[in-house]
Image (cartoon, rainbow, N blue to C red; front, side, top):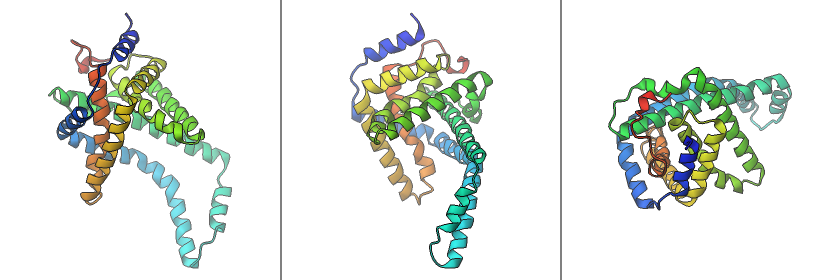
Length: 256
């Protein structure tokens, strides 16, 4: 039996899961992973900084020019966007895609770390960069592009489908992290199968976890969001763990 067939079989035979149990277990696991979750946000911000500078610094200049005039003048904005060439726009799109791919790889590394901490294994900061190896990068680029494409199509269909797609898309990174040997198509297939099977449970946990992370982060003077933002990944990790699980006798350190 092939690996993808085994995974799909486990999903088809998935046992019922309890919302309260998954949520409480997520809190317990978060107590082990919050430092690494904070590092994930820091690494992501550092990676996104060049893009933020390229896009927002010119806009800041326009806002400053407007403030001197004392009124809202659309002319500077019109001149700015009319001055952007197609090549510049393509460059910005390519930069967004490249940085999103890097962010995808970092998140996959975080799931690897989360699994290690869950099983009381030793972790290192270098684990974040485990999937930066060349033979993984092409696959992560395809998965990032696929995620973008599905999300864009869902938005174009009057936004409502994005609520459906949110759950399967949230599993793509995780399925890759623990099964990097699968093809991109198999990873997407398994993610949608798992998302469909546990859609209501996963959707509820994602929404509640996101709200809780934001509220607690804001209570901690907004900077706390850096510490709590990664909490949203824990319920989906535990759903994956309970439904698909991990191969016995295959330590995560030797996954290639």
